[in-house]
Amino acid sequence: MMDDIFDAIQKSAKRIKDVIDTKDVGYSQNENASGETQLELDIKCDMVIEEEFSKVACINTIASEEKEHAETLHSDGRYFIAYDPLDGSSLIDVNLSVGSIFGIYDGDFGAENMVAACYVVYGPRVEMVFAQNRAKLYLLQAGEFEFVKEIRLNEKGKLMAPGGTQQNWESYHKEMIDGFFKEGYRLRYSGGMVPDLHQILLKGGGLFSYPATSDKPNGKLRRLFEVFPFAFVYKIAGGEATNGHEDLMSLGYAHVHDTSPCFFGSKYETTRVKEVYAKNA
Ligand code: AFP
Image (tube, rainbow, N blue to C red; front, side, top):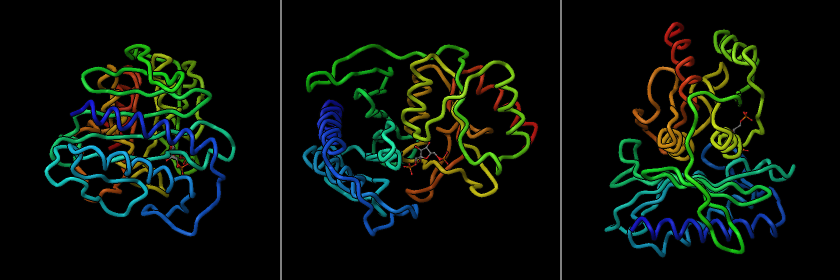
């Protein structure tokens, strides 16, 4: 059954790549549930995924970053999938990488029910990471996704991707990030969480953060579509995922569009985050 989902994601990814390559980018009049103006491209990509998932009988319900409410596809299906069809879509007009993110849940949404997570990066090449018992990297070549390798994080990395408006960071958060840079970490931040987190994963480690800020006390990134799937992937790859105090996979959610502060990284960096945040709780 998971193979059918894996297959539907691959089909969606290939179609989304075509949409990105051919469709003109124009702003539609609609606002999505998070209050952002939707690009036509987002809507088109959302439709592609919904269409492919509709053909898979084991998918019960879908929740999309582009839809206000969850939608039931097959009421006797087993899996619930939350997805962000085109994360970082505002980066398309400046030709940076974007991605699709999928969280696959058994029986109902919620981190405790997550059984697999997947993301696709649309960059100079199209890559996919599918995490179930292991995190596996695939590359789209000549129309097919080919297995490349298993991904494992080192204990400590070299890259820092610090999200959020710095002016609105807590002072202890700023000191912590400055401290990492003083240790020799290098800045890598594009503003697309998929390529930013992908880079840290493939280069062995580091830290991606999107903290609570004075303007966004609950962070920006959405639990079901962004936070839980990447927390799952990072943990399977030997890293950690925390909100500073708790494991991200131990968090609940009340509404499908709920957000959370989040940190994803290798063990050395996430341990530091937990120490700093414990002192400043
Ligand atoms: P868009 O889809 O609006 O471009 O947002 C992308 C995103 O949700 C995530 O991919 C980034 O990590 C994050 O926003 C970047 O946010 P900041 O621009 O506030 O750093």
